[in-house]
Amino acid sequence: MLLNRFFRLFKSLLSIGSIMPQASGSACPIREFTINPAEVSFMNKTPSPSGSITIRNLESAFAGESMAHIKYRYFAKLARKAGDEATAAIFEATAEQEVQHAFGHLDLLYPAATLTPSRALEIAIEGETHEYTEMYPSFRHLALEEGNSQAVAEFDEQIAESREHAQAFRSVLQTAAKRFAALARVEERHANHYREALAVANSTKESA
Image 1 (cartoon, rainbow, N blue to C red):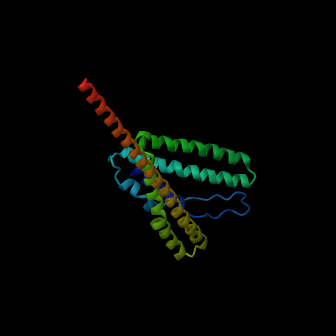
Image 2: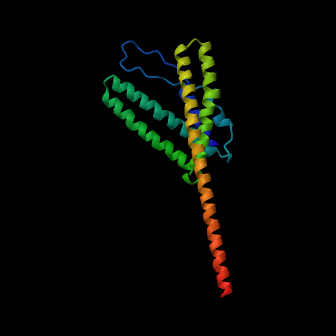
Image 3: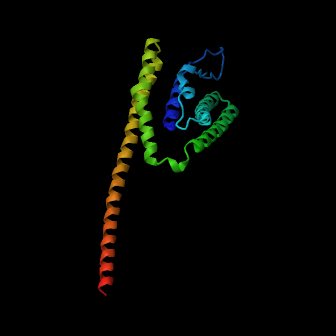
C-alpha cells in the first residue's frame, strides 16, 4: 500500500525537527527541519510491492516534493508577515511547482484507473487512524519526557483532529457503500424485469 506509506511518511517528516536558534534582529525566522535517517529508514529497507528500486525512488521523491511544498508555503507566510512580498511570492510559486512534481510521481505510482474513490477513502482512514492511535501518541510521549509543553499541546490537537478526519472519511465511505448497495438492488430488479420480458417475448415467438 504505497499511498498509505506516503501518507505516514509525509506526516512523520513534518513532525520531525526543531526550531533552530535565530540571530538577534532576524525579521523572518525560518523553521529548519532536520530529518533523522532512523525515522525514515523503512523507505529504503521496505520493499515496494513490485520490488522495484525505481518505485522506491519515486516514493522518496514524492515525499520530498510534498514536504517541500508545505515548507515553502510556511516560509511564504513568514516572509509576508515580515513585509517581504517578493520573497513570499517566489516561495508560493515554487511551492505550486512542487505540488505538480508530486502529482507527476503519483501518476506513475498510482495511475488514476487503478485507484477507486472507495479505495482512496480506505487508505485515508488507515492513515488517519495510524496518526491518532500510534504516531502522535508516541511523539507526545517523547515531547512530554523532554518537557516540551508546546509540542505536547500540538500533538494533542493533532490526535483529536486525526480522529475526526478518520471518522469523516469513514462516514463518507459507509454512505457510499449503502448507496452502491441500493443501486445494486435497483439494477438487480431491472435485470430481473428484463429477463422476464425476454422470456415472455421468446414464449410468444415460439407459440406463433
